[in-house]
Image (cartoon, rainbow, N blue to C red; front, side, top):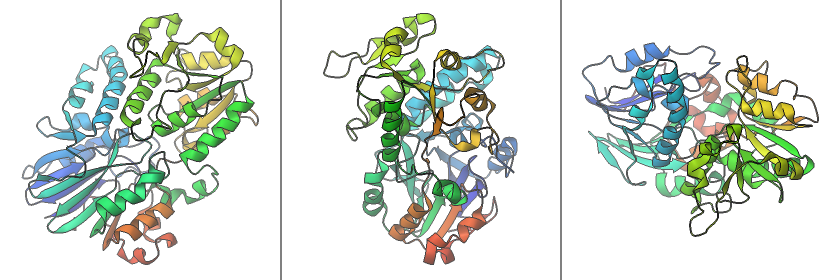
Length: 452
């Protein structure tokens, strides 16, 4: 039966797998693990894998990954080895960097059969953007889009004479989104027959309404004000939330130091090299990036130490020297310690030695104590720093606001709208902001086919 089948992600954020099928051929979009704190997963990861690959009469021509977040790629090791895999070239580079640390821990714990690098090395980069590739009658055109993950993708799909836009996770308020979203949709997409769209923020309307920080530009401006008022600034942000990392880096006042660890610095290097031609104001080397090395051993930054800014003799990565950094003040990217009960990590140890650290919390509020997906590592890191005057929540969503979903509908005029990646498909189907398009929203249960 030709059409679209969502194996998981109708009433669930994350853990996504979608099938586009024609005859006895199909492609899959994403193959993600369920997010921590998912209320009622539509299936376990094992059940999902069995359902997706139980039909021996269908050939999977490819798996296309929209981006590198675990809820979209987390089950990539469970994909049969003969199926071609695709992702953005920069996303592949970031996945490799992440896998270095992940695989080290797995090998250390005797789980060599679960390492990720061999699978990542199978992933091929997307073909030329804005052009189609035909997978047994399923034509796919990848389009790079704005998301909290760098190098994320939407897909325009042509099947049986129908034009489908599959959004994946996206937004319109990041560093690239505010200037590229509308242009991309009008010039590259246009009118569609079917819109398959994420709806994360539909169930978080109240949450976003009370957040004054709506865009990355506003986040950067507020960060500048905070950093100018404190000498010891500590930012808790996902290292792969690249736009926000660069916003914080660009918000450091002149004369203050920017500090991070080698992993975070390598992420920044990948991001700057990927985007500096397109967004030079935000994706460029400014102040030196001071790198925390355990036991002051420069070996941890050997590759970074040798790097020069192209066309110059400048080395932007230097080892952190705490005495001069403390004297002039600093902004330090931090990461929560994953085993705080065993041994305090380097960031927690540094924060505990500071006189009066100000914590900028730039992650989803659901990870905090009492939150929907309370993260013990985050809770431990924030312990003692939640009082007024010692921390501030400064975060903007990685997902499209409801008004941007409505704008997307206006620009594409779809005849059918299929919501996914949302906690409540019922709320999506009756959202007043969607106006005339409410009657075009169709919902089915997990595993049912939208026939085309």
